Amino acid sequence: MAIFDDGQPIFQQIAHMIEDDILNGTYREDDQIISMAQFASTFQINPATVVKGIALLVNEGILYKKRGLGMYVAADARKIILSKRRDRFYNELVSKLLDEAEKLDMTYEDVIDMIKQKKGS
Amino acid sequence: MNVMMECTNLNKSYGRTDAVRQLDLRLEENTVYGLLGRNGAGKTTLLNMMTGGIFPDSGTIKVGGAPLGPGETPKDTCYIREKNFHFGGAKVIEILQIASAFHPNWDWDFANELVRTFKLNPNKKMRQLSRGMESLVGNIVGLASRAPLTIYDEPVLGLDVLMREKFYSVLMEDYALNPRTILLSTHLIDEISKVVERVYILEAGNILLHDDVDNIRTQSFMLTGSNEALDQFTRGKRVIYKESYGKGSLAAVYDRIGEDERLQASKMGISVDGLPLQKFFAYFIEGSGHVE
Image (cartoon, rainbow over all chains, first blue to last red; front, side, top):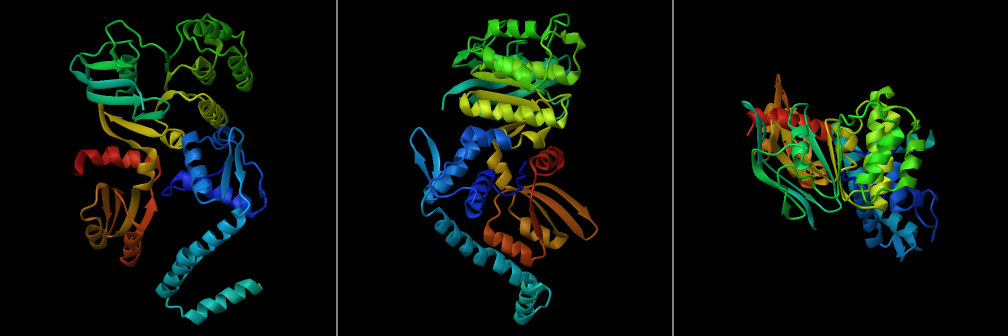
């Protein structure tokens, strides 16, 4: 059972989960994703929340709807997700990393060294 | 959206005790509501009034626009009581047969499937069932009735964690396929935070708050930091609870905190965390006594 974080809307977390599944290859281009009812049942979550999460991805061109059939992964889904997530990686994670480094009196070089060390280990 | 049921200025007292006072509540079509309150907050009294079991001292209850008179029960409503069954001698299957006669949308295939899912023996007598199994029989009635308005009073009482999760799964799946209005009255709050869309918080017979769960989720925070920094940061914000320990304090805030404000908080040495619904509820009720 997936655990949802507090402080972030669940529909965003649902959207994130679907994005992860597209990134890791669980869903490929033109694959159908699980239905709203299956989602609601699996995660014991209100279907309105699922609909909101899916709508988010439809608006971004990551999913598309086949009338009467369900939701499918768009052709460019992976590309869109990658570019969006990379932006967020830069804006959020990198900023946080540098803020924390500053608090700890670490220089830019210290941080780079640490990254290299981690990568090599 | 259409209003299924509307309670306006309800009052009910027993002797000198006001069980429910000046209570307003509104249930719209195809929505799942949570009625949250501690034991003794007045939840069951309210539900009994909404379903015609007792009549309010004053105030009105409208069902589909028409007022509910004394002795009347609301149409198209299925009420699953916490203590459900007066027929201890009846078998599970007989309880389902009685319920099926009352509810025009009753689905026998679904009911039988649920009996299997929850591993109930249909030939057992009600009085032989454990507390948990008794809850399950009630929940099966609530699900299979497919009533436009279904009200559950403490539906997971006595159920182990596996059965609770199974119940929420089935409830959400069936609601997705057959939308209707559902009211879950419970003191087990974290469990239903993903299931309900809107909550009413009841305390001492009065509605303290009603809001969308998403709003509460995105606008309730726990802040910790130095007294001074917290005072400065929370100025003008809605603080629902505050507690000091030495030079530090924690504050529960029910307000928007934007990205730039988070940054500012971080610079002031304040940590900002999301608040689980259960915590929000506890702080809100505790704080409602002394903090503005």
